[in-house]
Length: 341
Ligand code: XIL
Image (cartoon, rainbow, N blue to C red; front, side, top):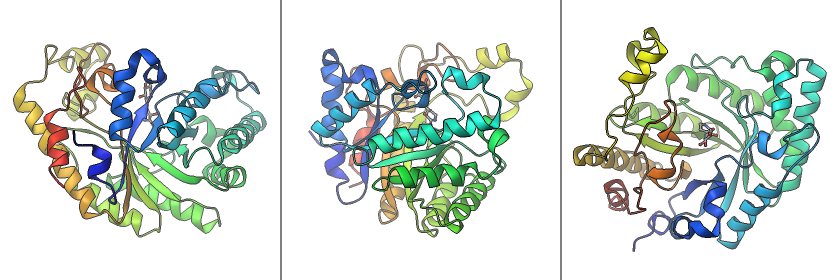
């Protein structure tokens, strides 16, 4: 069969998120797809802080090391994900209030984790999702305790601990103008401090029917003009309504959930599958136009059955956002992406 990574060889890397279950021998079919189609992997959850440092000062590298071994025996590059993020933090961080302890956590976590994996991962998402939609810094535990220089400091620590690892800023919606302006200011600030930042990751959790193509193109150009790599790091195209859209903020939680629950519980209608395939095709034509700027395109999962969007943001949803279906067969989107070459 045709392989994604072969099709885009010389254009950009093709990646997927990988979770612990896929490394188990009984999920051979999934790991087979990973080996066949991808040349880079991002751990979906298993290098996040709550997994690596479950208790303060006690690290558990078991799953991460298994993942790294899987990657290296299958010629997959690795993008570490993620060092500093407000979400999926260890439980002990939830009750931490004093700035000194939080600073100590940041220093120790970055030194220990980035140091251990220097030379074993190719890159880190050093900071994830630090911006709000208006481009200002998100009101996180890190901002409150450490002030607005904490991101520069995180990159400085990562640079010291991992001199051989590429360092990235990663976020969603940074193709949108206001948030993009915030990301550009942030990158410039890191650069002006003399600290290394090698790239920016646009997550790419979009919806069929509203992929912001013009903003994406502007973003590639503007980020690339800063001298950093541009990557699409968590690509998936949901076929379900976006509950954050329109006036849904005015709906009660229950109304919102029932309104957007589950239109296709029994399978993806052909017309929607075709619309999704065209949306993916349009995106890949853009990525190819900017093949000199775009370094990597990573999908947030391998097949529809294991996508995080089946239960997020509404539990019980069945979604179909990826290139392979639940039986691990290539969908129209897969064929249409291949046909761009
Ligand atoms: C998601 C995972 O896919 C889920 O399995 C987990 O329950 C929550 O996190 N932005 C990110 C990713 O940077 O780490 C998130 O991954 C999806 C949104």
